Length: 111
Length: 112
Image 1 (cartoon, rainbow over the protein chains, first blue to last red):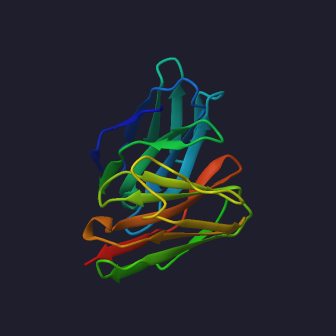
Image 2 (tube, rainbow over the protein chains, first blue to last red):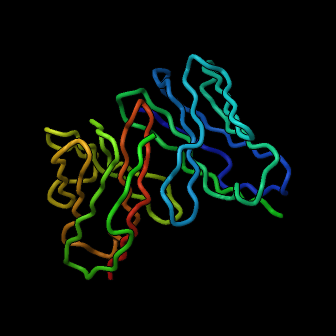
């Protein structure tokens, strides 16, 4: 089965700086890679995703990159704000199959 | 996107009792999932519930402990049976919609 590893487990950045979270996956058949943001006391919220036919996707201050050859994908948050503080999860999936989640990254943005 | 609601949002239960968690989605979906999330941990899939068929359970989870119903394309329930303190966790309902997966707000369960 798929194995998703996520790093770092915790990340602190100054407000306005960039944050990068990285994930690797093992199954070359995986072709869908979503990122979720989970705030305290809430369910995970889908914030951005990328499919294997695309190398990069951007939505305002967040972007995701995918390297299929190396089997890794990353979340980039620019101009971080205190409201970006949350736990972020990556996942890998083959549509129609199970989603495999990373272990999560706790991001703290220091005002 | 799909909007998911769960009831109850939280509960405190006595050891040995059962709790049924409800999940309602605003769109018709084929696949619904139930996850468990221990504090500070990642998401663990309990089972997949497709309408019209028996739920499929992941290793370590059994139907007698976590019976699931899926009566239609917008609703599902998960029962946590004969609870023990080890069942204290957040239980999350999730759906696959347009090849994306969406989560409900979760049910925070504490067993005393």
